[in-house]
Length: 482
Image (cartoon, rainbow, N blue to C red):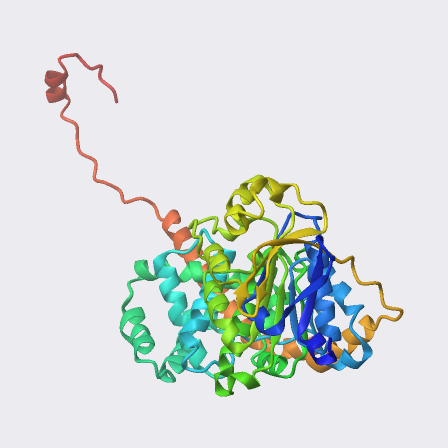
């Protein structure tokens, strides 16, 4: 096999029948994506790590979104010296040098509704129980307005709803007639009661988000310090460490989903270059259900045209069903759009469903009894899915003699991070003003309620009782009382 063909194939495992031959998947077939499912400890993380490390060693452009952090940190140890400058290491827990990531920045008019919808999907995933139709309508129009306003960030949501002068500036800048009509003719005429049902709730949730300095210092920077399109076109290495234990589960889910939306937008912007000139970019998402929204289905169906290839893992299929709406859109998209499906050992419930994919070669009972590090796979070969077959995966790569992890982190921090003092100076005054207005509004609402409680109830005029008439009605004598 030539060196060029080696680079075009990513090794997956070794067949466990006949001649036990190693096999892999071509770059072209990876554009139909890879889905890996299996219980904890069965070997799926090792397979994913091996594939990613091989991609890095072959000089490919790759991305990793890791909700636990261990995978992201381990990969750093395997990056060779000649690729140190290719690495962008995004770690929100590095609070002294936050990387700027503004999902509202430089979005073309053709993608604004898609970005707003994507961000709405993120918020609804993170806070699933609080969204009314009115809240969603208000926030969607707020995002669409801010997407047109230069230099705006998610901090602008609070300003839009609390600062009339700022809102007027944003609205005057609008070119979208529908969004402009909302702010001029609808929002302005909302009654206090109507507005009170949506506005405070939106402020509360967005306020929670930006009140966290870790998130505020990333999303509040007007200019992103990383360019996702350049990362993809340049074949760079984007490692996103979203360890829940360090930044919190909601923050991890929110940032991960926003990055996925931004990666989708960057991929779609490649429409400006011919398809055969679009460089492959391989995105690995571990435990991807943490970041998936309904719009994920669109990514799976559209990404391959723009040479964005996904490798997705999770533990069981129920994770792909929305717990609130019970939507199966993501699950349906996986089994409708993914070309290569790999299963390690799974539970009985999942095995019944997966049997439909792997029968008659393998049945449910086979799926629940797979040995560790053994897989059943339907492999995409030259655009056609193969019949299912079994294979063994390889053990983890041996540790490198020398790790450049510390140098990689320092190099990435110096190129893409911004010193905390500069970030606070840049966004602090803007946020503090918005935060102050929210506090003042909350205080006024509280004082208004307190005034109502303090007021004495209206005094009704007392009527003189006709005691003789009362005696007649009751039929009983009443004792005289003074």
